[in-house]
Length: 305
Image 1 (cartoon, rainbow, N blue to C red):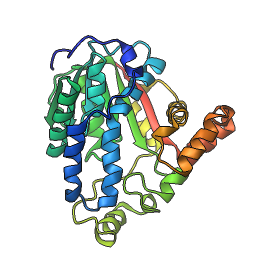
Image 2: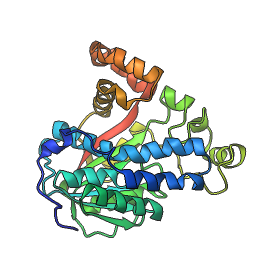
Image 3: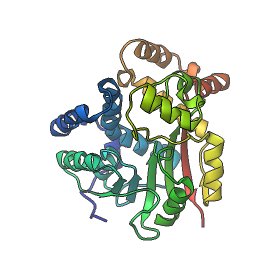
Image 4: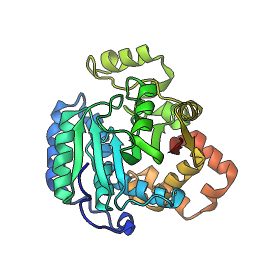
């Protein structure tokens, strides 16, 4: 593990987001457009990669609220499936000692350049979640953000995360919610209506053959349900600390109170309207509706034993 990059106060999570100051990283990201199966879908994924850094800052704020015993200064943090390393960069800026695992070599290249632009050190390694090249109890926090549906072996992945976390360490886990109404209309990964309702072999055929994604390019497994994830966590020695719906509503409120983070048009107008009416996200029946309509699955779990 690298040394802590520099002293930083936890308030770094609340400072203005400087991710717009990544010109070399963003230029390198744009170079990869021609490698993608479809330019329009690349825009969706490029936005996802860019959003990793502000998402890391959001995770810091979330942990401060829901896991106040966690402090990033000097903490050992691993991001499994780190993509372009935006999340570990945000934690490194807050004083953590960070590592990232990612199977895609090009993402790691972009991540190293991005860390350099931010002036922090992150230990980025190529590999898979099912075989983490770290010692037992090596980390205080593991982040698994929208990755569980991509791994080959979920049980092995969670067993490995349990192994590398110290007793009492935290797992921050996010997955899409496959049967939220919006997911039925627009698949979380490829924005295709009805994709999540198809059996997985049909999903692969439809994406790769009908929609032109190309053979071997469909990298999504069956997206687990909320109850399914909770069962897996219990089975592998984790205890969920916060109701997932509460974490989802926390995320939603953050998005709505900063509507410029939403895409232009209808979403932004709706965001402004809701932000002016707090009761829309505070009433229990409406929270249920938000969750069923557009929810995602958020978990903060503690390693037992």
